[in-house]
Amino acid sequence: MTPMEQGLGKARVLVEALPYIQKFAGKTVVIKYGGHAMVDPVLKESVMLDILLLHSVGIRPVLVHGGGPEINSMLKKVGIESQFIQGLRVTDAQTMEIAQMVLLGKLNTEMVSLLNRFGGKGVGLSGKDAKLLMAVKKPMQMPNSLGKMEDVDLGLVGEIQTVTPDILNTLLGQGYIPVISPVASGEEGETYNVNADTAAGKIAEALKADKLLLLTDVRGILSDVSDPGSLISTISGGEVTTLKKQGILSGGMLPKVECAVSALDAGVGSVHILDGRLSHAILLELFTDGGIGTMFTR
Ligand SMILES: Nc1ncnc2c1ncn2[C@@H]1O[C@H](COP(=O)(O)OP(=O)(O)O)[C@@H](O)[C@H]1O
Ligand SMILES: CC(=O)N[C@@H](CCC(=O)OP(=O)(O)O)C(=O)O
Image (cartoon, rainbow, N blue to C red; front, side, top):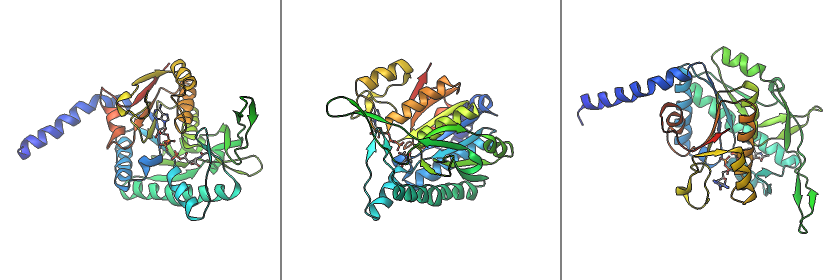
């Protein structure tokens, strides 16, 4: 291909993206990025660049990050093993301390630094800042071996009670990109560990976001988790309930579908689960017709 043809190819991509860029200018897009898709440093840079691109065309991006695998490896180093119940980490005081150190001290600052190095104005926050996320201890019930429902103790896992998005609106209004760790405060100053998808969903609801994008390490919801070809492109709340009953949705997919359905009910414009391992997944979702991953429908 000649340099002239290459140039024309790039220009065509831009012209094709233009209607989408115009459609989303001024809109709020909440992006949840985490899990294994966040471990690759090259991918991480590429996601930060995509977020900057959104910002530079007038979109208001809000980044909520996870970090489950990094928390796991730090816990392993200090000899602590985690148990997960329905995709949630049972969190004792020591686990909480380490999770907070990894999420805020390492991952949040890392992403803010990347955004700023690439010319953006990223600001790191946790749910504790300006009372963004207030939580109580999350209750949970599970069937015991006899099938009878029993209380299980998740420790310091938080259930979000209120979201006060003022700080986010202030930052967004002044051109900053908020980067949020999923740690919340309790009324008595307790620290709670919140699943990052759940935090992103509640933040999207409070901001009345136009889009919620949940980036993960699979193509989207699969009807057979071992077959990447079994992607479900669109799904309704009713279908989610059926898949749950059939046991097709499990582990970390449960908080995702729950927050997605809740966000749509609360008026978030649209919710998508995307493959965060795919380079430029965010741009493909926003700026092309086809869309990728799973889209939730009302
Ligand atoms: N039906 C399903 N379709 C796709 N993934 C599923 C399904 N059921 C369970 N999963 C699991 O959910 C995982 C994604 O959740 P999780 O590991 O918490 O992601 P993240 O860390 O990106 O938030 C997938 O890697 C997969 O193992
Ligand atoms: C309660 C709970 O499970 N909190 C999560 C918070 C981080 C997270 O959700 O990270 P990913 O999105 O990368 O999985 C945890 O401790 O792993």
